[in-house]
Length: 317
Image (tube, rainbow, N blue to C red; front, top):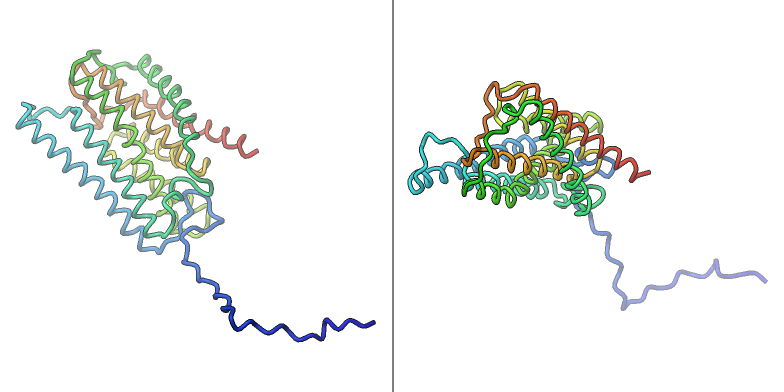
């Protein structure tokens, strides 16, 4: 018996059934799937050319204006001497919050202009994870604390260890540091590693040169933003920026660099406040303020990168 199923005509469409909708055209994505974190944006060449300088100028102007306003108020209302260049609790608060706001603004604008989810500027292809942030904060607390102790033993005066004293200014500085320094450090990572690194890398299509450009370019800008001409300090800031960029690339996210930056700045600021003789903290980046003792902190940056590399390698294996 011969089958006749192949000769049957196709079924007529039901007149009461709406035709299947046409496939919706996808919006162009700025996230090439094959590129690693830090070189994962696809942008027109002119967008980073405008956005990167604009974000840097915004950061500097916002911080300068807020510090100027606080200084004027303290001189007029608080009896502060115009020749006093130390950092008061109020000044520290506005400095830290301005950097935090700059980082958030950088991520928001970059996500809008690149038409990507903002989370992709914090971690990709995985999502941001609080557990990683907590893990690295604990590990880096021990590491940075050990480095500060070694530096104080090697060169206590050069490491910024002065007279221990606790005054109302000291208490205010410590409280402000605990509340706002984590925001400041996270803001700098969002700005330089979350936004600027992939924006600069987007100028190059080949992956490896793009990564190199993004890491070096964002690290140079990070160093220049600290406005120091001392060769030791410049070297430290350059290694610090490259180390944070390497952590982001290795771990495919910003949790590790944010954790290191937070614990580094927080511990340094609290120690600086406690050993400032009861006065405001003085941050001097002029020539001669750096020295061979900075090699201890440079070594800590490299050890932190090695720890992240070992951890990620074990996680993926």
